[in-house]
Length: 141
Image (cartoon, rainbow, N blue to C red; front, side):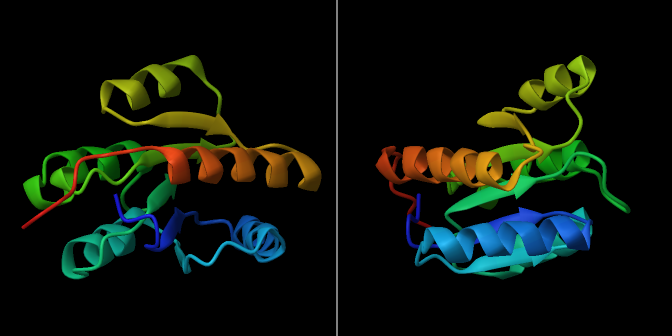
């Protein structure tokens, strides 16, 4: 896991992207923050970019390639799977079937987007701090 790598957000809602960017600016993590408006763009970046991201946050409901489809494509790509990049769902949907489907795709967490700025900031801080402490196998290609 590349703890200095980019934090990738796959989110089609521009307002949510701006809110997350504000939170990360305030939290002052040194990781680059990358936003993708759909799963296809994110997948293209993850496949073509040799630099391993730190963590991926994905919405479930997105145009072109939804979060579950994207996760499956990442999991089925040996190079991407071996990088051990944490893949988390961060969605407004807490529908039980989405949660079941997500965990069946070997995700590392499912979080419902908080409604308040302070709760969003607290949730993202907890998630990032947890993964900064986590140990994973070194990826060597």
